[in-house]
Structures are given as C-alpha cells and as structure tokens.
Image (tube, rainbow, N blue to C red; front, side, top):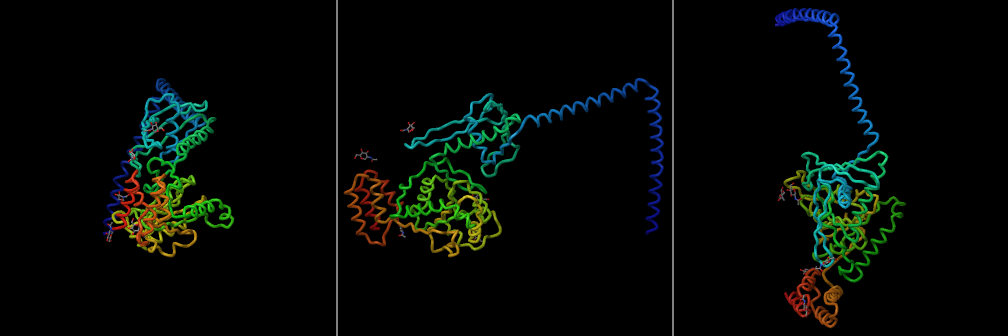
Length: 447
Ligand SMILES: *[C@@H]1O[C@H](CO)[C@@H](O)[C@H](O)[C@H]1NC(C)=O
Ligand SMILES: *[C@@H]1O[C@H](CO)[C@@H](O)[C@H](O)[C@H]1NC(C)=O
Ligand SMILES: *[C@@H]1O[C@H](CO)[C@@H](O)[C@H](O)[C@H]1NC(C)=O
Ligand SMILES: *[C@@H]1O[C@H](CO)[C@@H](O)[C@H](O)[C@H]1NC(C)=O
Ligand SMILES: *[C@@H]1O[C@H](CO)[C@@H](O)[C@H](O)[C@H]1NC(C)=O
C-alpha cells in the first residue's frame, strides 16, 4: 500500500517538473523580446514616458480628491440626528416653523389641536421631506439632508428609520447646540400647561396621543383630606433630595392607591401629575406582552419629570415565575421581576411611583418595604362627603336639592355604596335635572 503511494507521488513530481522548466524558458524569451523592442525602439521609449506621466496625473488627481475631502473635513462639519433620538422630532418641528430657503421636497404632518371649548382645529405643518434643503440660521448656511435608510423599518411604529444630517462650516459648529436648544424649547413650549401621557411601545416610552390639557386637582373629588395628604407627602419628598443624597438612600418613593374600580385612582394621579407640572408614564402590569426584561428596561428609562404609574400591580402577584418561552404565551410580569425593577431603578432624578390595585388582599407583604411602597391609601366608593361635593359641582346653585339628596343618602344602608364613576355617570346623564338624578340614584340603591 505505502510503496504504491510513493510511486504515484513520484510520477506527480515528474509531471510537474517539465512545465516549470518550460515556464522559466518562456520568461527568459519574453524578457529578451522586451529588451529588444523597448530599448532599441524610440517610440516605445516615449510611450513609457507617457505611461509614467499618466500615472503621475492619476496620482495627482487622487491627491486633489483626497485633498478636497481633507478640506471638507477641515472646513465643514456634519451633525447626524437619527430618528431614534429624542431631538429628532424637536428638530423637524422646529425646522417646519423656520423660513425655508430652497425646499422643493416637503412632507406634511397633520396634527389636531383641541381647544378648551371642545372644538378641534386641524393644523398642517410642512416639514422638509427626504432630500436636501438649505436654511440660513443666525447668518450661517446649513445644509439639511433628510434620508431614509434603506429597508430598515422601526419595528415599534412601522415608520422607516431616517437620519437628518446638518452640514455647516466648521467655524459655525457652535450653532448646532443653539439650534437644538431652540428646538427643544419650542417643543416644551408647545407642551406647556399640558400633561404628556407616555405608554410603552415595545422597549421604549412614547407619547400617547397629543398632550392633554392639565386636569385640575379639584376636578377629582376624593374623600375629605386625602388629596391634600398625598399632595403634601409628594411635595415633601420632592423638596428633600439632598437629605436622600447625603444619606446615600435611593431618591424614590412609592405610593399605593387601592380600592374598588371606578373610584378615581388613576384620574387622581393624572390630576396630581398635572398639578405638579409632571408628565406621566402609564404601564399596565396585566398586559400579557409585558415581560420582566421589558419592565426593567422601561423603569430605568423614564422620561424626565415624569411620574410612573403602574396599574393593576396585583397582576404580578399571581405568578412567582415567568414561563421561559416568550412569544406565543408570554405570561406578563412576575412578582420577583416587579420587585427587582422597583429596587433597581438607578435614576439620579427623583422617582415617584404610583401603583394601583383593585385587589390589595393579593399583595405580598414584601412589596410594602420602604422604597417600594412608602405610602398606602385606600380610595373607596363615594362617601357622603364626596357625594355632596360632586352634587354641588354638577348643580352649582341647587343647595336645597343637594340637602334633599344627602338626607336621602343618609337613610341608605351603610353597606350599600356606589362608585364615584357611577355617580358621575348619573349626573352626566341628568345634566339639568336634579330630580332625575336623585330618582336614578334611589333606583340604584334599591337594586
Ligand atoms: C373655540 O375656541 C377657538 C379658539 O379659542 C375658536 O377659534 C373656535 O371658534 C371656538 N369654537 C367654538 C365652537 O366656540
Ligand atoms: C403581543 O405580542 C404579539 C406577538 O408578539 C403581537 O401580535 C401582539 O400585537 C402584542 N400585543 C400587544 C398588546 O402588544
Ligand atoms: C399559556 O399556557 C398555559 C399552559 O401552559 C395555558 O393554560 C394558558 O391558557 C396559555 N395562555 C395563553 C394566553 O395562551
Ligand atoms: C362600590 O360600588 C359598586 C357600585 O358602583 C359596587 O358594586 C361595589 O360593591 C362597591 N364596592 C365596595 C367595596 O363597597
Ligand atoms: C337645561 O334647562 C334649560 C331650561 O331649564 C334648557 O334651556 C336647556 O336646554 C337645558 N340644557 C340641557 C343640556 O338639557
């Protein structure tokens, strides 16, 4: 066997050797030919010079090219704003309001604005579409390039990924910051007096609809003193940042509002956010797609000046562990996932977390540790105090009817209560008609 192998190898070597010899002899022939033609023929010698000149020119050209790229790099400066960045929307809004120089490609953004009287006006804002645009900002020209990046699509809202690139002279680079600050100011001015409500879109927070007009704190009627107690507690917390920092305690406070549905827990928190000039991030823990990872990520990326509202916090208490398979049967947030997220928030800003539940009896005592829930408040069905206040809010001049109404309510069995939402529904149905409202409430109590 082995001897056969060797012989085969030897023949292979023998086969290769002659071609090698031929090759080198061909090379020798070609060299002598070249010598003969080039050295003895003046035309070919000149051609060689031309070739040299040509390559020299090519080198020079590429030098100019790279030189201009160098000059571009030295003289001009680019700023890229990807659509993922917060300032992207601010910038588009700003530039839509800015006098345009040479925009031939516009794109429209339609927005609705609701007035306090309830009427809605439609605004069309023209913003630079994909393409190139030139603006003059504080005496400096800026080239705006808005580009869609290929087939990439932002999975969270289906819009294509875009970038806006601003180009200006290097010496004017400080204007970028001015411009972005101006754009941010414009955006915040538009939201002044409004509460932005954020909801989760995949792993990030997105404004939910247009910013809402602030809700007045006294538009939500809780039982006597409760609103004031909570407000004072939040104010006290917000004014004591240094106390927490000095002691190395995470600067956060958790509130739990519990009670039957329709008692105004969420409405009150929204009104409180508006009163404190905060925005609000709402997350429903019962949402089936919410996983521990997403919850953790969301809680660590809360937009600035926002109150976090976790609704149906008891939803996490039925499950101690999350099924590993996500997708078809993702089972929501687990108890340990919630605790980790609450403990793990590492924001330098104050973190105010409100939680609501209809089933406080399902809560595990572990959540009542300081830092998780520091303040617990029952928000129940309408009390006599709330009924009177609400009646007077809907029928401001009907003092006698109010007395009649309250006198009736006092006679009702104390175990029978109705929610403030139901009470408000009855008042709304009988806008003018106090008698209608009273008889409707009597009917509710009778059943
Ligand atoms: C509502 O208010 C806006 C501006 O404040 C006004 O333009 C509009 O006409 C009003 N609509 C009604 C129905 O009063
Ligand atoms: C939950 O996830 C599934 C599949 O991943 C998706 O089809 C569905 O729209 C999601 N539901 C919500 C409320 O996000
Ligand atoms: C998830 O899976 C469990 C059993 O593994 C099943 O009982 C439950 O109905 C499923 N939930 C959903 C929403 O598919
Ligand atoms: C609250 O009122 C609703 C009716 O509006 C009633 O069904 C419910 O039982 C009441 N809950 C409590 C705790 O009294
Ligand atoms: C309220 O009552 C007045 C007269 O009593 C009537 O003119 C008005 O249309 C009523 N409004 C509503 C909303 O029912």
